[in-house]
Length: 356
Image (cartoon, rainbow, N blue to C red; front, side, top):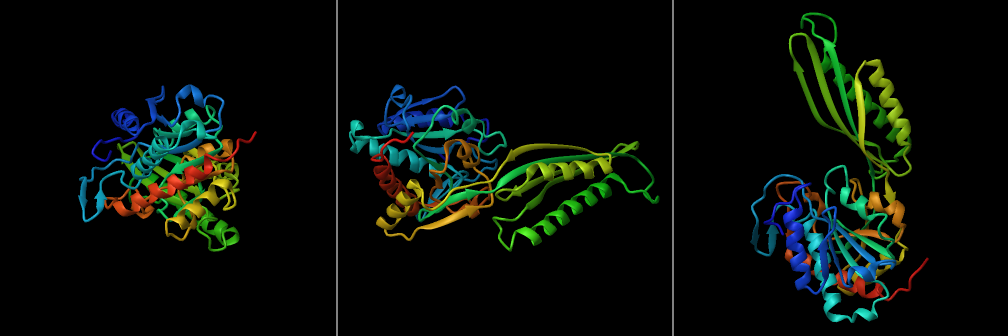
């Protein structure tokens, strides 16, 4: 999987490769009309109207080539952590269930989805399936570590701010476009700092977190133009509309243009759901001590969680500190342990009765 590049919107080659691999594992598999990989313990028509257990991973990675190598039990390569490692573990655990458990013993089909475009703000693959299925339980394929389960992700808002001003001599007293844009960013930063002092109580997950993603400028002798791209990580319950209104007011004062994209509300569940308890049992049964995490990023949980409900977690081998970095790697021993944990979770969940 790591040797097949699959940047966002370029997942097709990997998807068709995984169809073949899933079939070798005993799964029914195909690529849907969006480009998602679908692999199931049961034929597609059997899943219609059922409450499957959905393992929702993603095939795409951020850009950047990392030479693929296996050395001393450590596998290096782009996507090893985020999120080909978790997706591969999903397929292997589902394949074990398909090979060793009679299909008629399942209360719920097991379905692995390798979604497209998770790393882009569109989350196109997840949005395509969110209304198609109503799962009994969902596991999102993201690195948590083989002994940890993620039960919450922050929200997101992407902002583009562009200010254009008449050019003037640098010896003059007027602010140029760069200076106006810097003042706007300083306002954003101060606004977040004051909000966090009042509401965040030193909690990163509860904090409003802005980041300056890019700053560019150009001058043509007639106009100065400055462009900012800002990303916000949003805490649970945050008033996104109020933030948008405040940013629009500041941009109006600057006579700048502002636009928004990639908006997702934060989502979190609890440790007491059926799927959370299944992971606690499975991690302990494999010699681990379960830990629950909240993440400051986003995932496809933000997309499907509000529709599919609380019986959802994120899980997968790998250390998320290496997401999107040149040091991305995964320990094979942890990867194997994650497959063992997932198999135990699936054995428990497939015995659960359906709900309405």
